[in-house]
Length: 265
View 1 (cartoon, rainbow, N blue to C red):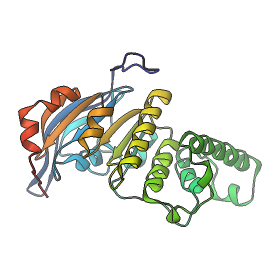
View 2 (view 1 turned 30 degrees about the horizontal axis):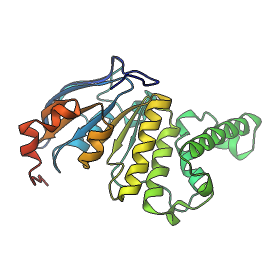
View 3 (view 1 turned 180 degrees about the horizontal axis):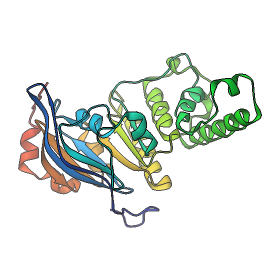
View 4 (view 1 turned 120 degrees about the vertical axis):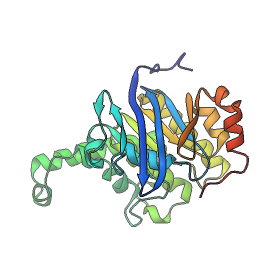
């Protein structure tokens, strides 16, 4: 699927090797291994409770797996904090919105620039030239993202007054502001209507193709997954039951069985 792309799919950027996670005696993830290639859109799917979000939590340092290794560009990621993971170029959105509802769209997206801010509280408070220059640069970057997402008309609006689909787009913009090499999107289209999903798909494809960002995507809408993903890994009861291009996964009997109304909540 890399033919004709601005950023052809490359070598592995993220590697999971034999990851296992337990909470007490409960196994959330068991011996999971797969690779994410540079510039690809890699989907993670599975029934509710299959371990998808737990897996993302392992990758970005919220959970520490008891077994296995996670590599980013050959560097071990497991066992370190989410801040260190973010500084290594991995950004994450969550199932539930985590926006500052009283702040404007622009200010919410500015939060994503924290990793790229070196000025301290005092230099900002006293309006020192270096701090002001950095603030202008960060705001300029965020305005570029706002234009990219075609939401200039709401840049000054409080996020809490926006429709749900627009709030999800703002959260996506905040993740883009980190300038991460990998964006991990945890159900970015949950709760959206058909038109909103179509819009979000367009921007995910756009950032992947025009910016070259690698995308790791959890999504329940199989139509979306099959349309925009390069490769799909399927989890069931915390184990990998399928891994391949969308057509291969779609025709797998194990995957078909897992989706016959199964829920593991």
